[in-house]
Image (cartoon, rainbow, N blue to C red; front, side, top):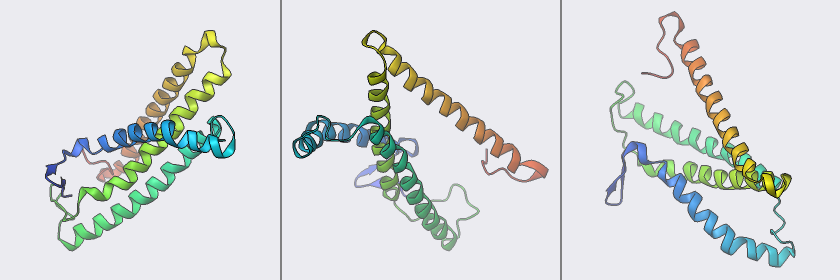
Length: 171
């Protein structure tokens, strides 16, 4: 993909910085603008969005992000085939990296909703003297999810490379 955005060339590994930027901007907007507005209209202190509702939103948004990613990948693959680049892993498809931004932005929003909702939920369930356990549980859950994800990638790699076939994850 063409990694040029305006006058900047985005390094391939830095595209996910937009996830962190989205997370940061959304948290500021949500906390300082949206929550006070919701609280005023609903007359509820947190605007009617409980921690469980926020966790649910944070779990649904990645589904939309992955659907968007599938559409972008379909377009990218079709473009690569039309340009004769399907067998050239280092080829640059005439398609802007900006196509990846909407799914990445949705993932940033999902992270904001889910992680903050989870931590607030844990804080509400533990006594004040044990509040540090809330962050520890969230971090532990993230670590377990990462471990399961790595294991899944390893299983898919082994299964798809059996019989001399090329793995789905080319090394």
